[in-house]
Length: 450
Image (tube, rainbow, N blue to C red; front, side, top):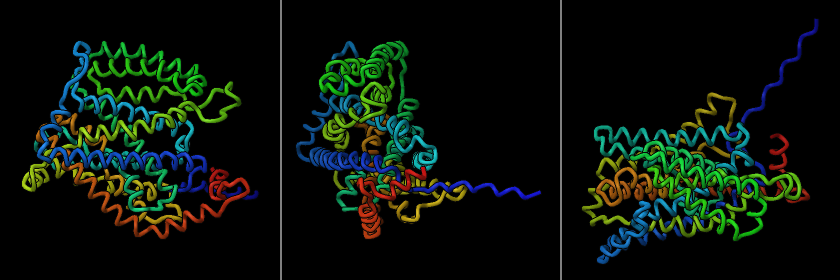
């Protein structure tokens, strides 16, 4: 009897392997827009800090706390609250679009591609939360802020990359964006579950009506809304606003409505729209139209109203940075984030058949993990939800967020700048290894292997 041939060895998962060329182009376009948004975000935060600590600081806080809105609908909110609850809903709408796009049509629809960034994002949320909780374990009042250091601010992070001139390869950029998107999903889940102080089911049930009609319209008339630029503003925006207002009235943070509205938008085109899956889907069209509004207006305005903290000179700064709230945030973002992301990625390579792509070294993963410690927009939001805007702990939390983000940016710069020569070579290899249609061979090979 002849011996049976040995079974083929399954291919090993490559961590940070190059994704599809189309995905690389799409991610590159997103990151270019986020770079501009990150610069505006930083500028708005700096302006708020200067104004809040100037002789005219009273006018800044008077503007932030100025109340406007319709009281019978519980929408008489301060400008700061409108920025946090209203404008950030636009930001989370984009998060919903991006998440659905990644898991329906992006590289992450394949488990082999999604397992590492998803696991790394979970590690990057869990470890900072545990570190903050360990520092503030003895005080139930400050322990409520355990979720503050769990978020990564992708706009701030890519702005740092642009400032330092890093030639970060596309594989690492895709990983960073994916990590931040999954991070945002975890953050909005935490906000919905743990930061809902009062829950009123009736408005939430009523919100299903405009949300359901919105979903039916974007699914059934996706081509119409994709080709008529005014149609979403005239038809979908009122339904989205009604959904937002009812979710807000239910006690759940209104930004959750933005994610739900983003999830409702179809990613793929209908087969009747000029061929099967031809051209961009409605989610991609909406992302292209509304990302400039989010990155250029919504997030910077929120940062302007949230980052303004009256430090009170060096003595006040020292008091803020020695508060366990700020200490926990700094340690969690600067040490916990990279430990969670790097440690989870390393653990996957040691416990599975995964291996690091030969183009990169663990120092690259370390630099990227440190960069993910820049937690700004969502961290500021969670700080306000944890302690209330303008309270002592909220101010100290914001000082901790600012200090930790700055420190993470400096440390990431120190690590990534030393690797720029290697990144340039990788970038050049991708550029010159092209075939007749301009698609780099490395992507062709990756597509064939995938």
